[in-house]
Length: 192
Image 1 (cartoon, rainbow, N blue to C red):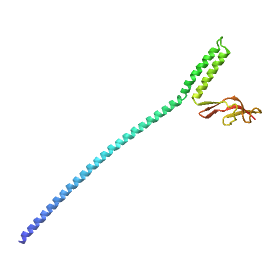
Image 2: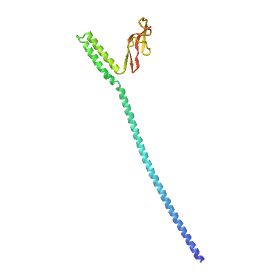
Image 3: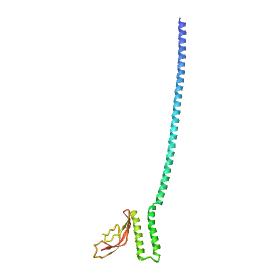
């Protein structure tokens, strides 16, 4: 009886040992499967990250190229604008130059009269003043006005009983302003 119990105990122990080995083997397989799954996930995530990084790098390169193109186009536009900034002014001035040339040709003819020449010169002068006005150039002719050192340059002062002190008696050379900024002061004679 005791021998039978010993045999059963031995068989149970062997069965337990076999079961434990089987469980250990299954656990190792499960662990290996989990490690493989984690490894696959990491590889997939790495590929996604590399793909995303490649997209960002491509985008950065395109943006850099676009910025370089924009910078080059802006530089060329700026150079063009500087080069032809006076084109409108030149276009407006050319008719006045044509009138002056025609006037000179007319003045050289024998039948030209003093009145005709003067009329032509006055018309050309008015044309040039119109061109200057079109481009915000203001002519300063301060005769009879109060002397303004910001816009006038006194060439001399004279006693003048007909004028108040510091009044512009005469203008030797007209002044000019461009967009309210003084380009050349009017040269004037001022009453003491």
